Length: 137
Image (tube, rainbow, N blue to C red; front, top):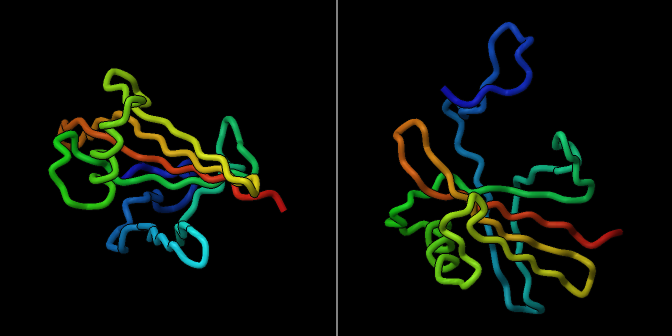
């Protein structure tokens, strides 16, 4: 069974286990021309609605669970492998890695890696969260 949404006052309990629907995955595309750019779409969490501490104007998305063995070839696993080599990596912390980037147009991007435990199969691993604050209008 998936995690239960906060809304439980429905006739049938709502869950977010996708119930046969395809997983919600973002596509990341990098382009060098005409200027370097990163496109991340289509799913973003609007952090203005997060509780208890809303962050108006910020958006994020997260990776699926990444095994501690880092033995997969998917891009998320490759990203964690690369970040583990950085001096900022902290194996003993809940937030194992955090780095922020600020851009000349006022936008910012943060990458965080968290220690995670998959309670379903008692495995340890990681998750990645990318948070963006786009340029103010």
